[in-house]
Image (tube, rainbow, N blue to C red; front, top):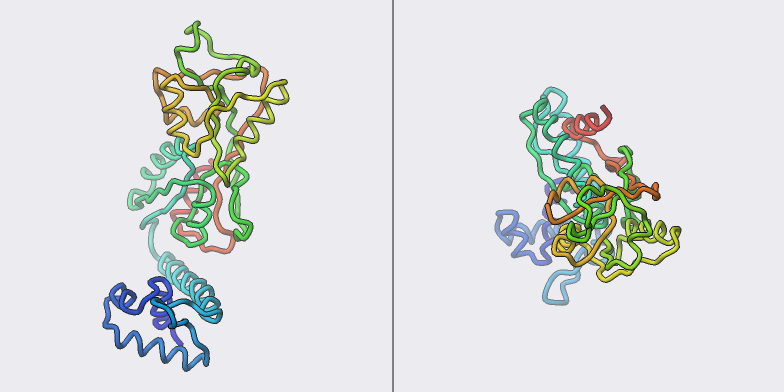
Length: 296
């Protein structure tokens, strides 16, 4: 069995049908069917259950799929590493970021582009689970996210470069602040205000941190909305619906006149931020240089 056959097998596994797999591979169906038969004969196992409408992986097929994906990724990364020995920094750098960290990217990308103009970027946005999955599938190389990364328990080991911590600030409709010169407040002033919180069924770290801080000041926030989107929460604040507490860097992405940001004078709590990547993965030159810019 060779690399070519593994690619054929994965195409069939992903499509669940030989006809669609042949189309995706830009080849005819009969040769692909023959290759599948040869693989099963060589291994002495049945890779697909053919009793239903589509093709379902058997236990042996599932094992081969997992191993084949790893082998093809390693093969691809080996070729990439060899090619990069004599090449400059170029290609596509794929990065994932949670929305609350997006504002950290533009300054670094600007510096990076001046140094390495041949590199282009692909940026994915999502929650921790989605980005963790994309990282494991190698569709992205790096993640910029709040720490700790709330991902699947089966997530492979990660390397982490911790960035400067991000202080929390109060964010509310500008119309709620009578004094335009006011730039700070006490945590207890949020007591009783309609509160908006960033929370999903799977990612609760920021929500939990804010709730714990509020309780340490003797009150429970009056949560009127739990939301998975930073942008939606900021739109609700701008519309005068509620207040929230966010890391300060988030505000760089939402410079709206209808929103007021106030430092919290008596609450010294911060959000940890980091860049993460798979420990066992070869990092491209561009990814390594991108990380280095955050170190300087």
